Amino acid sequence: MKVTLSALDTFESSFTPLVVIELAKDVKDETKEWLKNRITMKKKDGGAQLLFRPLLNKYEKETVENQNLYLVGASNIRLLLGAEAVGLVKECNDNTMRAFTYGTRHNFKEFDDNNDDFLTMAERQFIIKHELENLRARDEKMIPGYPQAKLYPGKSLLRRLLTSGIVIQVFPLHDNEALKKLEDSWYTGFNLKYQPIVILEVWKRACASMTYRWGTLVMKRQFEEPRPGFHGVLGINSVTGREEPLYPSYKRQLRIYLVSLPFVCLCLYFSLYIMMIYFDMEAWALGVHENSGSEWTNILLYVPSIIYAIVIEIMNRLYRYAAEFLTSWENHRLESAYQNHLILKVLVFNFLNCFASLFYIAFVLKDMKLLRQSLATLLIMSQILNQVVESLLPYWLQRKHHVQVKKKVQALKADIDATLYEQVILEKEMGTYLGTFDDYLELLLQFGYVSLFSCVYPLAAAFAVLNNFTEVNSDALKMCRVFKRPFAEPSASIGVWQLAFETMSVISVVTNCALIGMSPQVDALFPESKTDLILIVVAVEHALLALKFILAFAIHDKPQHIQLKLARLEFESLEALKQQQMKLVAENLKEEGGKEKAT
Image (cartoon, rainbow, N blue to C red; front, top):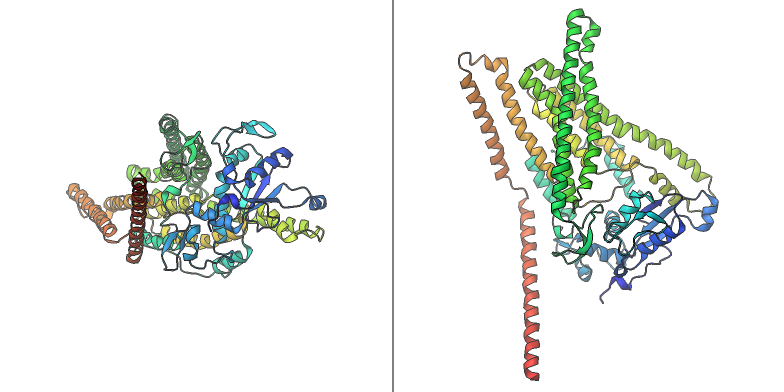
């Protein structure tokens, strides 16, 4: 029997909470009722058709302080239909990965009508997030109770509620049993374990194997919905036939080239200006040292580099906020397009901000001693600052809050579900994991510090390994105990970051060959003709790059067994399409034959 969304009940009194919505304390009752109706309303009427209830009932609210916390979930059938809507890919009984459909649900491994664990908790929360983000205004002109919070057809309701301060946050709950297992395997033992090696060609193959197993490699791009921040006039997408906001691309291009591009160029100029101030400080510190020559002035030589390293970190973080605002203002339809434009803006600035001084020292000043000193200072300072800001400080704040929540829960009356209440109250104050962007960026910059000038300061690799060993464990601790659980974001690869790492590796080959050619030892081998030295350096550099690209061509991005499975899946999809077309032709011929017989 075919099950439709309109047949589902959205008023179950008890359900497994998956996502928490926190409202501001002074939100009006009419706004709460409107939000509840939009979340529980049937899909055909513009709702999300989910389950929704407050964390505390009216009697429990009298026992503890009023908390505007609400739990969101969904029935099992609703989640299965949602999995089909988002194009979720699961493993079939024949060991292939296919897009899940409710009609063929029994063809998938471990599916049972009485088993609610077919979808993982991360997949269920991803479906809930997708449905909440795609709640869009229809005929509402404003959020009820808040005339200043204007709405227009196609506007994301969740986005407007967040920007208006009505909704404080939306977050998924941790799975405590799974979390305990992760803690035991990730960081409790603090053992040196195998980690994937960031070798780019081999990583592509490992990435393809993992994403195929997770079902994200074969997720179709057409299922990518407009991002929540995308706005425009509500209309019909000419490709998908779905109702969604439409926005002219020429307006986006005007914003990019007339506003974003000049702003980025201005920031790059400001970064270079700060760099020249740093060199003035270096010259001043060197002059003081040459005049006195004491041990104190010897330490003073490192002060400009330390100050510059701190300034670089501050500028990177400030620019990141500005880049996010501009990229959001450009109004990109897809999340992938938004991320690509954001990454491009941030990478250009960070590359210049972090490495321009090192290139200037290496190829303009040609001071290898100062290059070695500056490289060591920038690398070590960036690692120390990242560990303090991203690990130690958040962990200390979270531990302090955990103690406060424990005391509050122990004071509650026994008739309250203290376990769920404690979990929600604890997790709502946790830090928010903002995605993998900062992690990728940190690794890319570290990769640049290590590889761009490795021949000048080989010890940089040792510092990077030591930092990464501690960061693997500290990041695991953060994900388990410091941050809220992040929503899953299906992806087939690391995206544009792969290109960024490959570009950095190409630049590294060029810079290291040039630095080796500039070294006194090599220069002494060609005392008469510098032209021969330049030609040999260029030839070696071209040979190394040629070897790199030959290896990239020879090593397939996907292992053989993954290629075969993907080819088989494509063949079966074409065969199914042919069968469907033949069936339609047969039905049309039968209908025409019936008409002729009737006449």
